[in-house]
Image 1 (cartoon, rainbow, N blue to C red):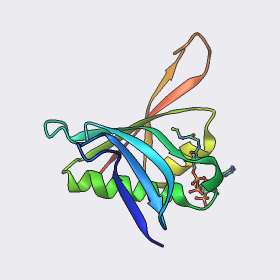
Image 2 (tube, rainbow, N blue to C red):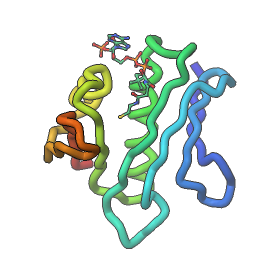
Image 3 (cartoon, rainbow, N blue to C red):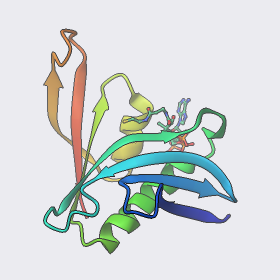
Length: 120
Ligand SMILES: CC(C)(COP(=O)(O)OP(=O)(O)OC[C@H]1O[C@@H](n2cnc3c(N)ncnc32)[C@H](O)[C@@H]1OP(=O)(O)O)[C@@H](O)C(=O)NCCC(=O)NCCS
């Protein structure tokens, strides 16, 4: 399997694309990945596109994020996930993320939003 993980644009965009065997299968945003003053990266808008789900690609994406963050000397990963997304929560936990904070009442609903972190 050929894996390619690269910024969307050459100009240090914080949006990254994942290609598997030449197919564009997903994307992720990595805030502060190119900001050398920040030691942590905030992961957001992580997605494996609908027709490519269920094939283990999210795990490849997480591995690539970790490798890239380490190569940029980052020491911590952070992300936010809604409580009603058990697939994503389980995925992050399996990668060693733990829930650091629970935020409620973000938009006048009782939904909870979890901030999860992992030390690299
Ligand atoms: C969450 C998401 C990234 C998972 O991507 P994926 O490539 O389909 O997931 P994988 O195939 O790598 O599977 C990861 C795990 O989730 C499980 N899983 C995946 N899809 C599932 C489903 N529909 N139902 C139950 N479990 C599922 C897999 O069995 C696997 O578990 P395992 O570790 O026990 O084997 C993808 O569903 C997605 O992009 N969703 C929409 C956007 C989103 O929710 N992003 C996260 C925002 S915080």
